[in-house]
Image (cartoon, rainbow, N blue to C red; front, side, top):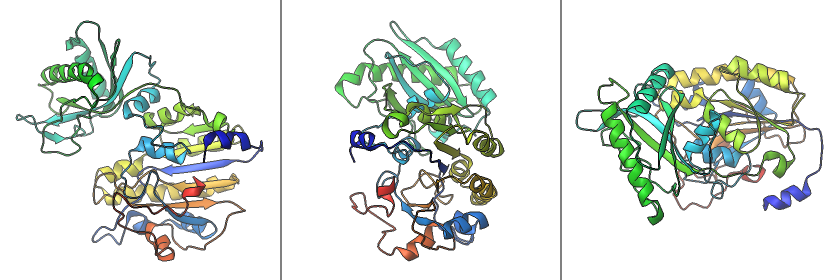
Length: 398
């Protein structure tokens, strides 16, 4: 639907909407574990919620597409992820309140470990501490010589993640990621994806060459991998598009960044699940729309740690009664993409979703997981190809 038409049809009201997004929620069956992470988890409160709600399977961006968290969240918030395609660098930068300018090209920076042959042995440098990240960023600042007419800024985000900012005239963001997204191979070259970006790409490659030398004596964080090059632009806010006064409750900086880009008020003083759910309770009277983000489901999936991901799901389940006690008019529980522990990466698998409202249709599912919905929806293809045309059962609702 045309977003301008949505704005014209808005009717002011006092309803409350809660989006509980468990990052990387979806999974696939793992041998010896009793199914997917959701199937194995003991989730009495989510199961009871599913039983009195509408449930379905959701492809946030499209069938057969493995989305990044940025495009997936844009889609969940009702923004076309193709039209509003944004690099991870911008999201990370806004997440830490970095003051971007129109001269900036930004990329997300992962500290990584490479061997003596230059091949990546750990894409996350052993998930170094934030304190180590800060020390290594300072080391880069002291040793880097960016060249005439260019300013290079490196900033810590959290753990192994940071941002790289190139500031200067005429810079372009059409640059290939240097993260090969697998280990055992060298980082990719910062290649221009458009002729106009050749000079910028060459400058990025020069920076990477210097960084490799500067960090050569580091035991873990001895290289950086770059993803999501982009320049800053303005996006229509949730207030402009939907008339919603929105609050984002997220412990991880990138998701605060996504929220700021669409005009949400962002809480920056939460660092764990207890603080997040407490913040929801304390601010419930002040806003119309609440985005509550859980990161740990994704992190444990990326680690390939099935049991730890199950434990996070079970912990979140324990907070569901507190959310329901607030009596939101609409409660949505889902993820932004699947991160099966079996794959230790994002995947294209569809996500289970709960839509709860006193006006919704109730389909009476007894278990909140990927498979219960499939049994009710035999037409949903478990293995869609890249050109599949199926729609998620709840796609029109998002």
